[in-house]
Length: 95
Image 1 (cartoon, rainbow, N blue to C red):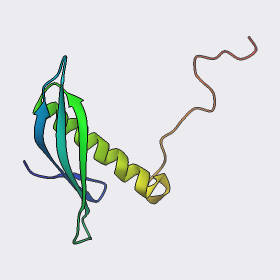
Image 2 (image 1 turned 90 degrees about the horizontal axis):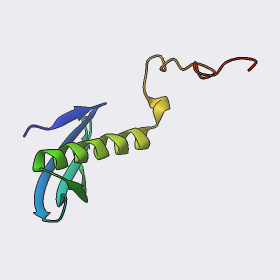
Image 3 (image 1 turned 180 degrees about the vertical axis):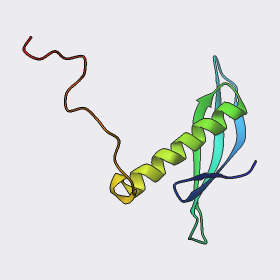
C-alpha cells in the first residue's frame, strides 16, 4: 500500500502477524513516520486488537496521527481554530 500523508508527515503501516484470540485478533504492526522534509523516518512496533488486517492498519494510522498531533502541538498549525461556543448550547441561562 502507498503511504498516508498527514500534516507534512508520511505514515506507513505494515501489519506483520496476528495472534488469534476471541473475539478479535492481536496484530503486530510495523509503523514508520517520516517528516516530508527529513530523510530518516521514525520506526515503531505496536500491538493492537482488531478484527481484520485492514482494521489493524486503520488503527495503526490513527495512532500515528495522534502521535504527530501530540509531537507538533496545536500551535504549529496555521489557520483559524475551530469555533467553540463559550457555553454548552444545551445549558439554559438562569435555570
